[in-house]
Length: 292
Image (cartoon, rainbow, N blue to C red):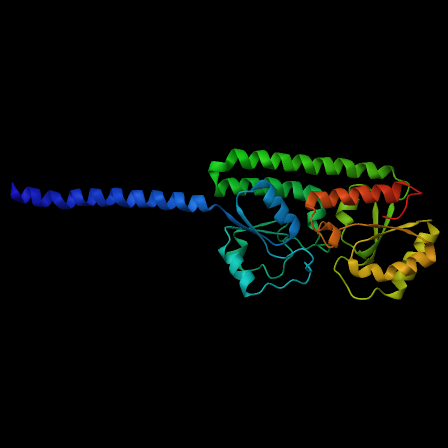
């Protein structure tokens, strides 16, 4: 009898220990779930999309507004943030985002596709697909918020569709060529409206604009009677006197979906796009409005 009691003690102890371990695991799971998801977005448009779909999660913007997205190089602190993130959102053209352990938890706008123009966040068809993928990824990381993630994704997709619809109305404007003082960042965005981008610089920010390029642009404007230019890069303001002297043009601002200008710093991604729409409509479809 005594031997049976002694034998049964370890069994009972194991059962108790198993229950304790189970409770600890449940507690830790709830604690981790309560912390939420840590998301790092490489640029502002992706950061803003993440805020819209997952406003209660921890979201970090890697490249701050106003910084040069094209030539950004992350430091040690940046890489630590990336490694500690549960999810990374990236364009797919960032040359420094090649480490396998980072790529496997990264959601790309495009992946393994060589593109000449890296401004893929302005291709609204690609953005729509990305929002759908982001919603599914968030649900896989936090299934308890499935309904909320799906609802917010549908709201964002509705906003994108409204902007695409407004873009198409620009096709009725008399002027079809958009002369941009800055780099060629808006090609994807203007394509939906049937407009052609004529930029002083290529898709990557460059140094001085070659005199030949300036001459060709001014000749084009003269030949096609274009009397409006759009300032994209703040550093290109220095070319304005030349255009105003030669053509007496009206000047409006555009942005590449990034708050580069001081007056744009408080605008979200969709507000920036709507500002572009407004200025394009005024500049291309009206002939006698004051400068903006």
